[in-house]
Image (cartoon, rainbow, N blue to C red; front, side, top):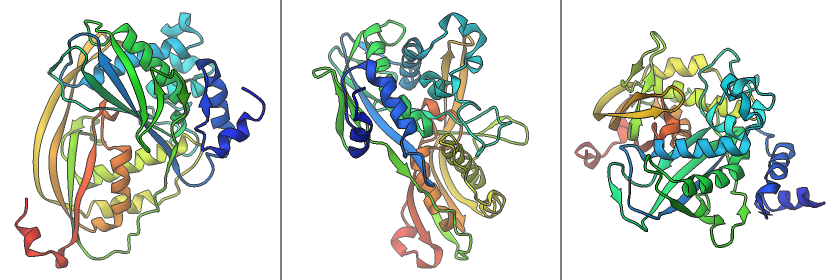
Length: 369
């Protein structure tokens, strides 16, 4: 990189033009060395990848699994420095903590600092992928379709590599039929700005957003009613027996959000000094007043295990009653960081649709669905 590039990137919110893939490592080095990791906040970014199919293409029930596999294969080819030793696994690699592939696909203790449990092997992934279209349909030749990638914590540094990997994945072909798909454009979802296009073939770093949540105030005595929508399937791991559960208890949602937010902050070397025990105790006081949920079952093929793996969750709406106002900010943050299991495959997308104090509800609220 040219002399003075560090200052130039800092003055322009780390969005200065990067002329070619050879500059990516220098860009990422700047992101690590800058002052963007200080303070009590979590970094994240969101990029939308727009493809155009060169032939008719059919996707499985969850198209995210198709794109995630193709993206990961190409990202590994770009980032890995010891491909001949892949059989030993990423965690034995000397650059595991800084590798773009490992950050997105093999999140582990090398990415989470002392702000998170060092004994926890099952850590939240630092990448989430969504799709802008439904599965089990055939798109005609020339159709445009989108995938959205969200990166958290230290994984924001992998964004330039993901753009190159996505372009290569489209050129190689998607789905089992290897249908060629041209990457037309990559858009920063924070400001709708184009960060890469096939016409210009130049990369601009997407805007890195900062998410700050204040510790929930537990001195809020009034009971409220909160309606939460599960947009994509939501499921949880039962701590008692380690099995999967589809029961959306409020304490499970809060526990998942606390775990994910603290892990993402810890990946940037920060520690969340909240009273987790007190927060969990209050969350357990909140009860389910009503729910309309539908179970969803699908399968994904694991290249590593060479077998199909069942995945499940519930979608719909749940109404909670109790001191939910204390957790309002944390729940709104959940719309960004997700909750539950298999979020890297697009699961766990939630939305807060209504929050009312019980003594302030209007008649029109009572009779609505």
